Length: 307
Image (cartoon, rainbow, N blue to C red; front, side, top):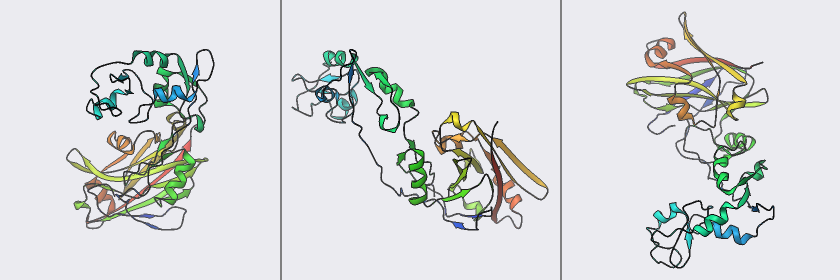
């Protein structure tokens, strides 16, 4: 459940057996796993540098590689600009005042180096000039994905197979095989719900994975429900697929058709862009029938591959 949300239940009525699902938990269920890759340096002459160069360019505080401006104290100890602020301008090695001394020699040494991408162990084998490496890594197609689970602040990252296993084993999300679905979202006292997230559902379709989200939130002053699909992969791959969502009753229906968003975009970013099926609360309760005191919203949909 998202912060401030309330307990919700989802009943799946697709080709899979009927099952009930708990609202997403607000507590992160897995610890962050961090990895530090071994880095080898290559000079412009093509000769590999030794570990001493790596140690010189590694900030002693955050242990990340340093980029200009690289600062040093009067005794020659260096650290990155971010950590200079964190240590309140005091050298963490000798405790001398750092002042505003730049280590231009080390910056020049860094300029002459070429490095492999830090995601080398995930499949990126390109080599980059030192000062181009950081920009590349921010957009590297091999960089890990963030966990797409929306009900808690989960900090786990990994490749797609690892995240699929993580979603299944740690978040206990429901996994479905197939490209069509028929879900019924249920909530009592819907007028009291301002912010809620129903349990994520993952579909295995065309050999890829898609995440179906359903949430209640405030759009301006209006309470709404929203369903949308995210693709477990990069944006260029997501554009190869389309999906549709449909909700309705009493001779009326709403239909949404679009392209699933990559999980590179956070679920909050997708939600706030309204890139999905948005249903005003009054209309959702009309579709639910009865005395409008309980949400019983049926959402059907399908996923297809564009030719």
